[in-house]
Each structure stands twice: as C-alpha cells, then as structure tokens.
Length: 69
Image 1 (tube, rainbow, N blue to C red):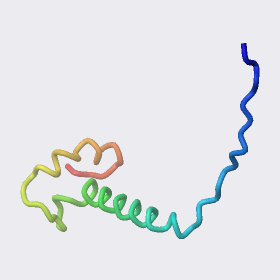
Image 2 (image 1 turned 90 degrees about the vertical axis):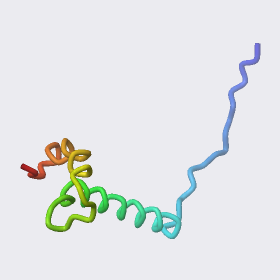
Image 3 (image 1 turned 90 degrees about the horizontal axis):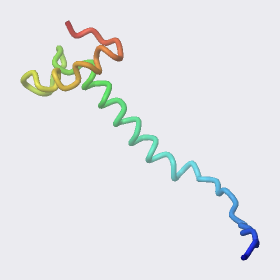
C-alpha cells in the first residue's frame, strides 16, 4: 500500500480588477433589469403590453415588498 501524501505547490492567484470589471458591470445591468421587471413593469413605465410579465413576477413582488394590488 502506498502511504505517500500528495504535495501541491498550488497557490491562489489574484484576479486583476480589469478582468472583474466587465463581469461586475454585466451583473449590475442584469440586476437592474430584474428589479425593473419585478418592481415597475406593468405600471406607468411598462415596456411589454399585456399582463403576462406581471403574473410571472407576481409572487416575487410580494416577497420583495413591492406593492402591486
């Protein structure tokens, strides 16, 4: 039986801020879009006609405290 322990020289590498910035901007835009659809869609600033978006995010509105009715 082999009792040799594996030794790794792996060290954590720092991620440069330039590599994180595009992902942070993309994530922020997705978050703003989600907040818009949950909080404001089917109101005065509606982009989508009909009631489908409202019904799809209805429970999320209540969960996050947005009034809808």
